[in-house]
Amino acid sequence: MSLDLNALKKSELHIHLEGSLEPDLMFRLAKRNGIALPYANVESLRAAYDFNNLQDFLDLYYRGAQVLLQEEDFYDLTRAYLDRCRAQNVTHVEPFFDPQTHTDRGVSMATVIGGITRALKEAKAEWGLSYGLILCFLRHLSEDEAQHTLDAALPFREHFVGIGLDSSEQGHPPSKFKYVFARGRDMGLLPVAHAGEEGPPSYIWEALDELGVVRVDHGVRATEDPDLIERLRRDQIPLTVCPLSNIRLKVYESLKQHPILDLLEDGLKVTVNSDDPAYFGGYMTENFEALRAQLGMTDDQAERLARNGFDAALVPTT
Ligand code: HPA
Ligand code: ZN
View (cartoon, rainbow, N blue to C red):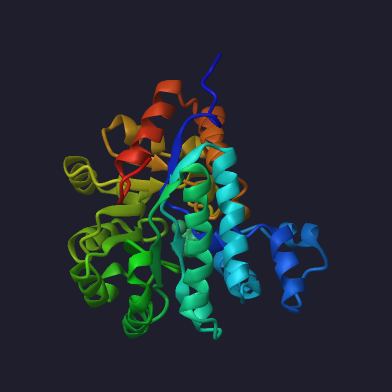
């Protein structure tokens, strides 16, 4: 009998709440808010989930997020994700949210953070979930806009523990956000950043040395730079790796080419995560199952990967 990967206790450190918006909820919220979607039904929406790269995906992801308007919408989105966590024994989460995707459409920061935190608090009270919320800046926008976003979030400072960097990576190096990250760090916010998903290893170096990140999101292109691998191993900098995402966005042609288990065996602190589960075909259990089916992940490796998810957490876990 092999290990039950669904029952295995897990921690998720790389999940965009907006990326957990399942097609049926997207349609339900569109109807509730009187928004027309350019798809006839759930099936035709799902059929559009065929991406050649990160930007292809982001175009759909931002369009999908337009159905989120009211506090209740952000609550429903987060609650649905947390219900999946409970069903998959994911007992700790550190989700990202992208305030600019919403505030740029006239939705208030209070609406966004209010809905998300209501669901998180409820899950903590109902079944003991532990969590830390991470506010992400959109890197295709300017550093000034990121600074304004941080200003707008300050009244809600107690509701998030970290700052992150996501969206279109190529051409938007971490160094572009040096000052806003310095300001966030001074406020006690823990810095993380997407780096080395599509971008080069130099972006991972910049995230470490110019943003001071305590964890790298994706980071898989570190494999191209032996000195960087040595740095990540020496400092035990966690990488939040997202196997199914990397296949859907064609970072690798197939999971068989994915380096996650080699990185684990090389002594790096790698973790398994779903990234945007509604778009990439799976939550935590499905990601672990794919690694077993396609890469021959052993039970011992699964247990070490799951444990790394707790070791790499920003805040205490249950
Ligand atoms: N990469 C960058 N930005 C994102 C992603 C991702 O995988 N998902 C949602 N925003
Ligand atoms: Zn991501």
